[in-house]
Length: 274
Image 1 (tube, rainbow, N blue to C red):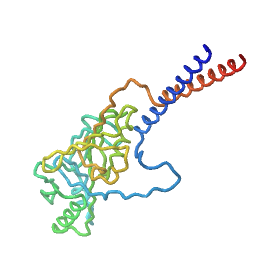
Image 2: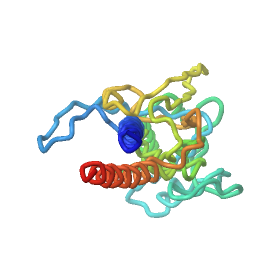
Image 3: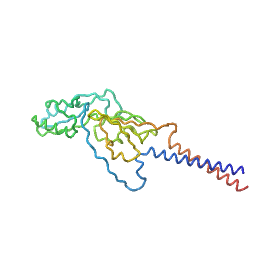
C-alpha cells in the first residue's frame, strides 16, 4: 500500500509538471511575432498596407543636391548649413551635439536656398518638394536641372523593454515598426508584444496614441505599420519579470519530467516483484 501511494504521488507530480509545460507553451506563443500565421510548409500570402509618403515638417533637416550645367552654381545651390541633431546616423543611438549638413525647415515650413531664396516645402512630400525646387531653379535660368532631396534626420525613438533603447535617425523615410524594433535590438523577453504603444504627433499639432499587437499579422494592414518622423514607440514590460526565460523553464520541466518518469518506472518494477 505504501508503494502504491508513492506511485500515486509520483503520477500527480508528473501531471502537474505536464500542466506547467503547457502553460509554458502558451507563454512562448506570447513572444512570437505574427503568431496567428500557421506553422506549415505552405506559402501564406497577404496584402500589405500601401506606403503613404510622409510630409515635410518643421525642424526637419533636408539634404538637397541641385545639379546644373554650371558647376559653380551647383556647388552654391547644394551647400546647406550645418544643423545640430541629436543623432548622427541610423546605426547609432543618441549622439548629443552631432552636426548634420542640410537645410533646416523653419516654423513657417520654409527653407533658405542661395539664389532661389525662401522656398515653402512644409506639408509637401519629398517628391513634391523636388519638383518645386526643380521648377524654381529652371525659372531662375538654370538649365538641365536635376534635384535630389532626402531627409537627413528622419528620427524614431524606441524605449522601454528593448535591448538598445534610443533615438535613431534614418535618411530613408520608408521605415516600418519592425525596422525600428530591429534597430533597437528587438524586444527583451520581458517586453509585451501584444500591447506596444505608438505615439505620433501630426503636422496639425494633434497627437495619436495607438496600441499595436505584434502577435498578430493584422499590423501589416494597419496605417501605423509605416512610421512617421518623430514617432515614439514604447514597449511595456510584462506584469512579472520573476521568471527567467521560457527556455530555462522548459529545460527544467523536461528534466523534471524525465526524472519523475524514471522514478515511476522503478516503483512499478518494485511493486510488481512483491
